[in-house]
Amino acid sequence: MALKFYGYFRSSAAYRCRIAFNLKSVQPEVLPVNLRAGEQQADAFTAINPQGLVPALDTGTEVLSQSLAIIEWLEEVHPQPPLLPADPVARAQVRAFAQIIACDIHPLQNLRVLNHLKARFGLDQTGAQDWCRHWIAEGLSACETVAAAQTHAGAFTFGTSPGLADICLIPQLFSADRFGVEITAFPRLQDIRAACDALPAFAAAHPSQQPDAI
Image 1 (cartoon, one colour):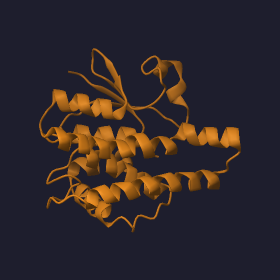
Image 2 (cartoon, rainbow, N blue to C red):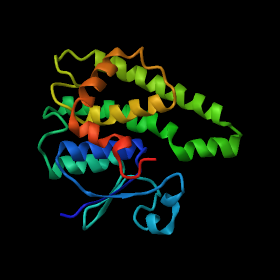
Image 3 (cartoon, rainbow, N blue to C red):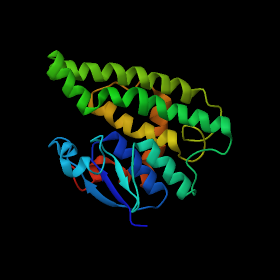
Image 4 (tube, rainbow, N blue to C red):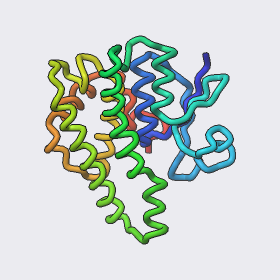
């Protein structure tokens, strides 16, 4: 199966997918889409993903979009190592943690949202940074509470091996650094980050290691 992955080095959503690919030992062909240059809105790309967003994954027969959908597809097609626990309640808890980030934090720091805030409401770069810091800090505070409440002895968010929650958390912490969010108030998240950073699958997915990194 020849996979083609459309992403951008600094996209949190694409970053999630790269980690998942690495954990599953799946290596698609990487086709960068320069968001800063507006390539995601070009006809050539909207023919692939009409929403004009990354990531997108061409499986050879279909094109998939949305990072969590891509990762869940990957989980079903390549079930080992598992990214979700077997227990239905535990699976729901992991998905909920992932969605705090993917649904409630990340969209508010998205480039198109920031551009609209600037164009429509006159927000300057300082204001945009403040906007991002507020929503990232609020969301990560909830993540810290959830992660700290876990009673397992594992190094990762929900156990002894990395999964969907960690896949979403690490890119969001990278974005927190970019926007100047103070994360010392989140010791459990920092510990999880250290455990993930020690794994080659996470290190190789880092934005600085991508072919289109600026």
